[in-house]
Length: 332
Image (cartoon, rainbow, N blue to C red; front, side, top):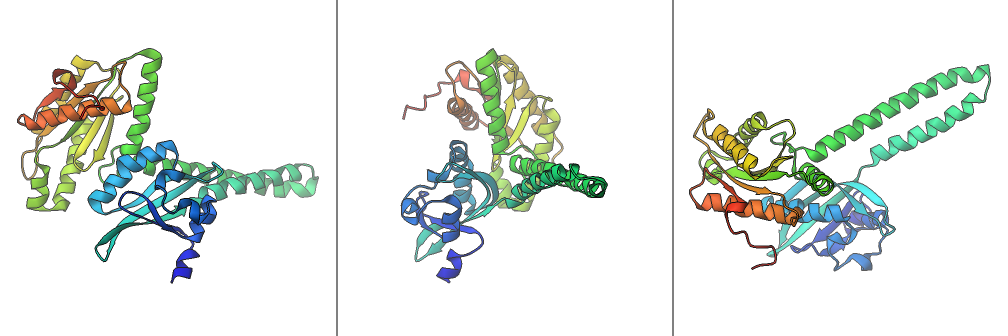
């Protein structure tokens, strides 16, 4: 069985609960171009890009800890030579003799590369056919059609991959990865124009009671219904994201502190007054507005502290980080 696992057509590695590599199969080593001795005992982030390290720590690892599994995560590894390797990542916690390990499989996304190689080959044939006389005309027409078909397939595949990679499958909202891309863009825009922007962190009050009372299927429907309400209230320029579980984040371009308060109350009221099937639903909201001294982490931390304040002071309310004392990330 060990030899079969080593030669399996997919990459395999196991991690401890801290993300340190315990074992890895030969297939994965061939793709990543490392020796086994170079990886055993190292953290999985050894072969992750900076962006995917953040994705692992902010989404993948928390999801594994909460749900004990994660499937079909689109990300990129980095080979020892620095080459990107687009993959689909799956992981699941297993327990053997009271010890937990994280079992992972890695599947390269080969089809897109295959289409690109086919297009290059077809274009080469076109150049050769163009130099031939009457006999080559029919082959040229066929090659042109093949090139067009492959190009369409490649465009469709890239669009589908981008959509899947940036969309939450349950609610249809932007997922955490899509939000982070929009968030980075907004911060970059701020450094160039100093146009103010804000964000909300919000979640459903007492959502655990919904799952405990009516089950997770009903809880999932609550999340889908809430997503529809949020999208109906959102402005065209806003990015609405399911951040994890019952927590959502909304990015608000060109929105200062006072405008953010007004919008947050509008969102809170829309949820409270909606026609819910089973029980009334309310949300708590934490707001933060980007300042010159902020970065990606500090703004989210401020919004999270404001959300915590809302929940600790009665729920179904809005709090701006400006109105409470938010400790810096370096304070304990």
